[in-house]
Image (cartoon, rainbow over all chains, first blue to last red; front, side, top):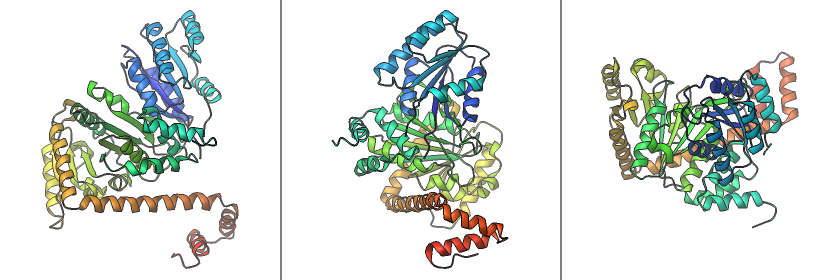
Length: 133
Length: 319
């Protein structure tokens, strides 16, 4: 039997714009993934709790508020301490290239910028996610 | 500890130690048909039976998720360990799913609630095949209140009734009149009706209609109550929790719980047998080839099916 790729799409912080997150969520669903959407205004702790309960393979974080350098590393840390380092972590939104590079060095598999085709995101996930039974 | 199954041992150890990650992974094993999923279930089995399983179903947009958010928050606030298993349909085309129940889980009191979203993965009813096993695992893990939420389409209502101790059907004036509820098979499975969005036009009428129809049912049968809520504002939630408690006490007292759980076990056996047969049957190349050849030769589909069943069991299949 197949293990479908499970993805948590999260909106950390005080950021009310989730059009992008929803577009990505729908695109990944159409690629056959099971996508869990957290809704808006989630704390890093809530997102990591959800990822643990849902046993996801991937976390995708959308952030447009400018607080990515505070919230995203916090999520990385929490995943590490909870023993969830195996989860593929990607992000997207309004994130300057220098910050994106820093986040990728810190442990994000990829930060996707505005205008990224959804296919590209789906293919990246498919080729990088840990395959499992 | 045996060396050949380190994953299984680690998982069961984590499960026994109360690690949420272990529970979550065990559920995934069921979803993915992992070869050792059965062993985890067997390990958990002696500890089940403590959680009260409340099924919540109803048409899309009735406010199930909002209601469940309020109800689980209510229990959590009372200090009861609470879990939610939310099942949403998989897309028949892509096999993917968008599981959005967490969007409504936005109150502080639900932060401690264990929430697992499941996709139906081609299951005919509203509950995925793995949902029954997932419910057992959550139960054995030590949760006291378990809500099973499913969208009410087609067979789902009957499905959830066979998995729950108390079944709640949520309706709103917008889901149509009481006759719609009757058509959808909701009347037979509900232990409690909830008319949600009770502040909208038509709510008192719907409540009246439901109560009227319930009175027509055979005397002697337990009468489901009809409650009203405004889940978004938390109104009627304490009353709903009390009604669930009442149903629980009544089903313990009159022996219907034991009967129901026995029926539930049998329903699960039937379901798994069908699933197992289906998988085995269509994985069998000669069988499929024979069916295809017969159809190509102009045979009626019904006759082909009857012949297959006869060959499998050595007697007549009908049609």
